[in-house]
Length: 114
Image 1 (cartoon, rainbow, N blue to C red):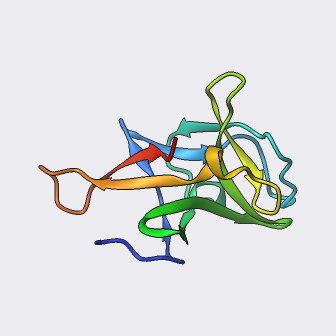
Image 2: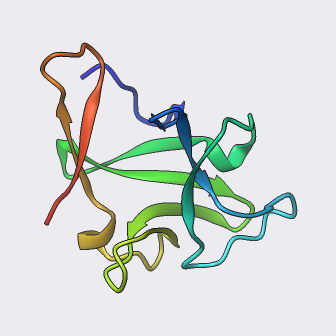
């Protein structure tokens, strides 16, 4: 695979970046905070790392802020994307399978494990 674990990435789609919504300059993040697509800010709320989870193709996408590590999480109540502290995040809502996009080198599709 062409990505590295424990290396920060900006996740880009449709001209915007995956962004933890709100102002986190105080480093306080709460479970359930929304994740949005936003213009590039060059701020830590848009820097995500891949944490290996299980097989080579399964990962968690995580963000480090003052209170620890937070996983990108699928909110089953409304199908929105939120963050959840790794200590209490459910596997079915955070574990992602990376699938190489055949026609693009180094580009991956993200798919929830379930």
